[in-house]
Figure 1 (cartoon, rainbow, N blue to C red):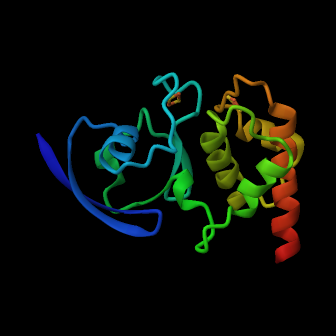
Figure 2 (figure 1 turned 180 degrees about the horizontal axis):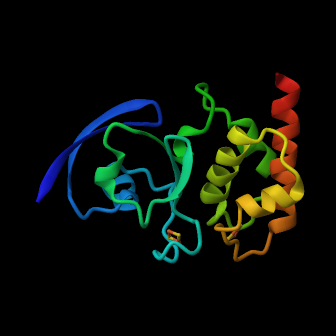
Length: 159
Ligand code: FES
Ligand code: FES
């Protein structure tokens, strides 16, 4: 059975219909062609599929697509600037070596975005806690934490 669904995706309105048991990650990747959101464990353990729903980081492999009705969804494709430049957060990951193979990066960056939206100046411990649900198989955690602290400093200096 399908139901109608209206939501905002990366700032643009989406009107579609989905099967009631469709996962958000499948709607994004398979029907809306946004493959920046990755699929890893499919069990809520790795964070590769993290997106923002109304500003909260969620595992889209566990999130029912019908539940985004009326909400705002942000994926990695929606984080950059309007002139195609990377966001400050993305650029900080590049500059600090926070990206190795890149598989975890979309989820890491969106979890970091959710953190920085709530806490613009997090400590290393707060960053590590916020990334507790995001695994990096390249073990680049030191650089990832550095990336987020760099992004925070740059964003704060812009204010
Ligand atoms: S694929 Fe969703 S948490 Fe791992
Ligand atoms: S950069 Fe490879 S999994 Fe994190």
